[in-house]
Image (cartoon, rainbow, N blue to C red; front, side, top):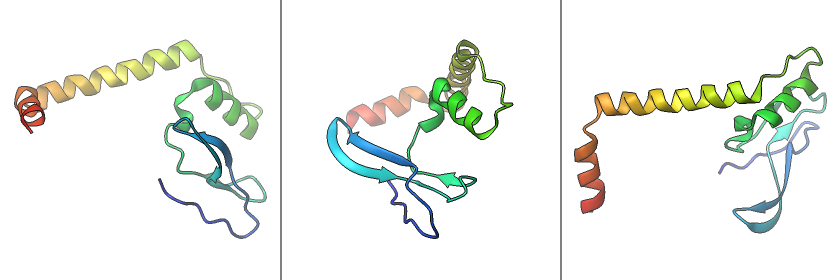
Length: 102
């Protein structure tokens, strides 16, 4: 994971109390003093529709929250399309042989 360096009046974006079930006292990312710019190394932060809706609503009160069920269905379709692409363009049997013979 990357390491954010704070500067110019920025503050940590995320405060962590655990990482991989181990207690920590750490931060990740940064947010500008005017709260208009933020970033982090926290993988999967927006994978959770509830969080995504709250976060985007905090940026724009007129944001129309997405339907959580529709978002989950969309995400599953994307994974299915990716799996189909791999099946069409990779020799998965050969790949499995390479993985399990090593």
